[in-house]
Image 1 (spheres, rainbow, N blue to C red):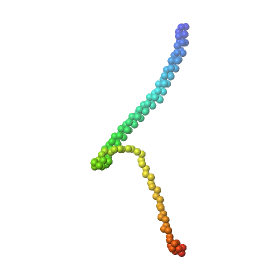
Image 2: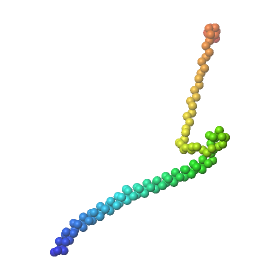
Image 3: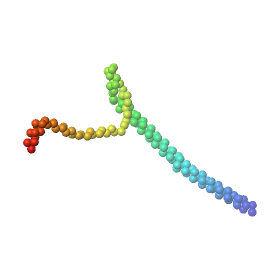
Image 4: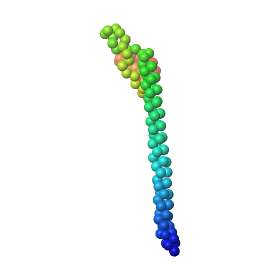
Length: 119
C-alpha cells in the first residue's frame, strides 16, 4: 500500500519533469537553429568580407605601385599616387545635335521689288 501511495505521488512529479525536459529540449533546439546557426552564418559572412577587403587592398596596392603622379611638378619629380577610388561606371551623355538655320539676309527694297517679278 505504501508503495502505491509513493508511486501515485511520484507520477505527477515525473510527468512534470518530463514536460520540463521536453521544454528544455525545444529551447536548446531553438537556440541552435535561431541563435547559434545564425551567428555562425554571420561570422562566416564577416570573415568572407574581410578576406575580400584584404584581396581588394592588395590589388589596389599592387596597381598603385605602377602609377605615377605628376602633382609635384615644381621639383620635377614624380610622387606616389595620392588617391585611388573605386566608383561605379561613369556614363557620358551624348550631346543633342541641333541645326541652327541661319536667317536669310534681309532684302533691301530693290531686291524685294525684283523678287516679285522672279516668281
